[in-house]
Length: 558
Ligand code: FAD
Image (cartoon, protein in one colour):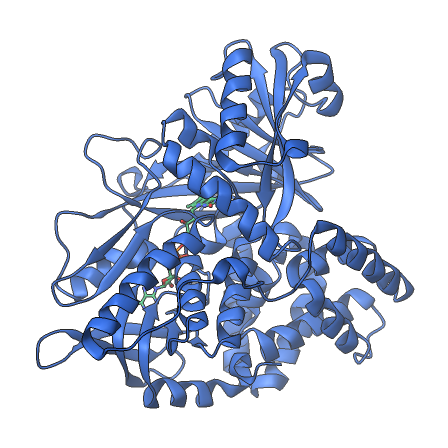
């Protein structure tokens, strides 16, 4: 139990932010900021992490949710990047085997596809070697018959075979929040709904902190620190502009959309990485009750705060899927949910959205602000190590203080520790037994263990305290109790979108939880009727935006 992550202690957390003098303040609670907070706090730094909205509400809840080596980077000959992220996948899996799970990926070989048999075989082998994949998990080449046997929905006309290779899958938002919780375990102070709206400067005109605004009360306060890191993803340039340090090197924002189909409608057995006619490749990934498909990759110039899936995105993904899986005949009404996000890429002259490198980069402004952008979910630990090394150097230079080296490759992520995937499986079987007695279907055991790991025990303890006839409602309320007390959940939207992933992976389950969850939030926070109505509308809007689509009115802006 960490009181610093209870939403009910918000005022105490703000008072800590106002009164402490931090070694490092991080702006942005996506995966990048979360990773930096953990790296720095575990080295002994006094760390503050803030986000203007909910944690992971930017790009870090809108990715393909793969912790992967990036096969497409091999196509672009980014060998070092493939090697680094390839090896990182194994480390992150080891640190949280319940949340980062092994996922076999099928790469179909078709008559007119990107890869032929020989190039697929060699490419996947190189990928395995670069990423240091263990022998048992190394790629297997399958014949046409074997391919159609394991994935009968693929196009029988054009399939010539396939490669089966190893990747990992996660929930990006859960990974982010668990890393923040792990950082809090090392003493980091983290709070959502705190906007950084100005930089503070010392007498030498060097950045010495930030001015913040509590988004719930509009009250401003100062946060003082030896160093400040801007890890605000797509907003990085906005903060660089505020810091008057935006130069020629800028972000290029590329929009990526995923659509969600009921698994019964698209009963895919394996994740598949397949060709689109325009030369790109996209994923179809089965996950519990759904299969999701993505992503698009289009330049974005609209409002960063409100990125939506539009009908053009849906049309593109449906057409590509129907081409690769011709018996499906997916239609618009089959799309039950979706998400849209922005890749904060570093602009490269003359390159298209798909061709720009996903490498990360650190910018240091003349007045001492460190900004980090680009990169991948998968590489968050290495990105954090690089920038915290710089932070440590700066503090040593200015204050003659030393900190330990990076050790996050040995710090289990909150929710464990589990030694390996087998231990996770054994734990899940125990949970299955427990919940079946309580009248919940088996699905919830996988759901709970993947989302919360061993914290499932705490949730199930609470589950028994709710006097509800319907066990699914009792479970939802127990999760909400957990979110409010342990994960800084302040409203229904954050709970259903990012703490539980229900908006994306089980949208129907929200129906019956909607009213009980709002009532519970009313009790926890003593909400006024007006605030309750606002939260209700906000949640309804989130559901509508995920599942109802329009053609973009201004094609220039999308
Ligand atoms: P964000 O998650 O956007 O976090 C930045 C945070 O800063 C936001 O929460 C925002 O609210 C906050 N912020 C901004 N301004 C302020 C301010 N003034 N004050 C306070 N807070 C502020 N990577 C992979 O490894 N695997 C994948 O499968 C994968 N798929 C992807 C698919 C798509 C469609 C996209 C778009 C990206 C994908 N990526 C993937 C890349 C990965 O998701 C991103 O690199 C990563 O999530 C970026 O995280 P971030 O923390 O830098 O940014």
